[in-house]
Length: 504
Ligand SMILES: [Zn+2]
Image 1 (cartoon, rainbow, N blue to C red):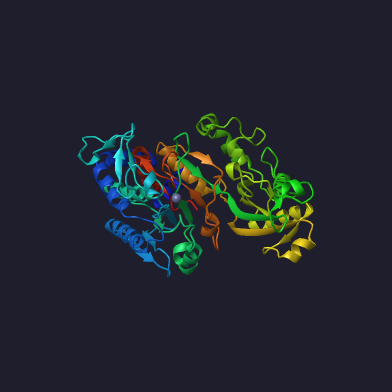
Image 2: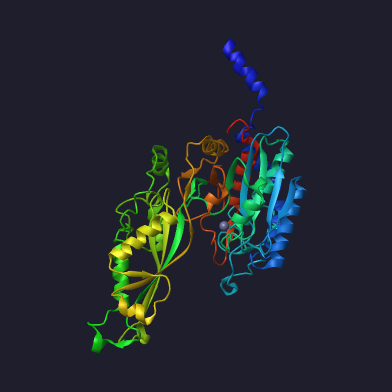
């Protein structure tokens, strides 16, 4: 009895987090009454061209987003670094909050090939599920299966709109967050985030929240919403293998002069087998084994592999029977391209002078670009190659039996947030209560510099994407399905209302 009373008193002193089920339901009702306004604001934002290198327009995007944040009572500012698009940072600070949770999205988009677009990329058009244009501004009801077509509709302006609409919903419901909310909108993600590290370093007070929610990319192919707890790292490699100094008649010299294409393909063959397993010695030594909870999450991911095989028209998959998501927990070596000689009408009976290959490795914890580079080079050396960093001169070519130019490109390590951290559990629990039980992916296959956000600390970084998986991200006719936007608003509202000060 005394114990129960003590618990009750403690509860009175701790502001109770808003019930995410109620917030989700009420924000859904709010949204249903405000769809026109939300879409009008979205259309305005989508109408501003947003290539990272289009300085005047990218600045207009940043200004527009700052104004949109200020309209919601956020303290918003543009962080700037010479020669880089601004980062828009907007804060909702609360007097008694003990935690700051940052929400990331980016407002720039991929370049466009206008000839491939059905309508202009920066003139948003609504279409129904059959692809016919819809006059949404004058429509009596708005079908959640309609899609907005414009560059960055899905990637990545939809989350910005969803977050701000969620704040509007909470205000009208008179629900106050308990944690500080920070919004961090980058303007050059699609250009490879060349200044992100500088921004995080130059503005440390903006860069160390207690946790990051990374809002980019599409939801699961099953259409269920998802949380993604990691991303693979990456590092690029260019190889050039050399033959004779000039092209030679292959009849005269065919089986006497070394052919660089054959040397290169043998080298590549030695690095990776048919199943996709990397044959470089030691490559799997640093690979972190999935934890029990990660294994359980992997087993619960809906299986969409049959659909994907049908969509991609592939007769089989690799990985010795492992599922797609199990394979994403492992490193990969992808041969991106190979260039040598000629084919078809261009083919000539020649031994070419060089052959080049472009490779990208995807890395998983605890591998790093630095840890795998020596392994790869040792392997190349063990195949009898002498490694050079510059195009070899005649003397070097004559002096070495087999010579390869090795050039490493940029890269960064993988990151993975444990699924059983309090913050991980908190996000998943809020989504579930709000009616959007997430698919939990221990890692995405692609790469995001999540580790950058952890600089100087170990704030968890978890991705919460909202766009449909078939949003034509990065290509022509990019779109977002309205139901995905609506779901995003509900979940953001639930996060903002229910993230708890006590949960550290
Ligand atoms: Zn993106």
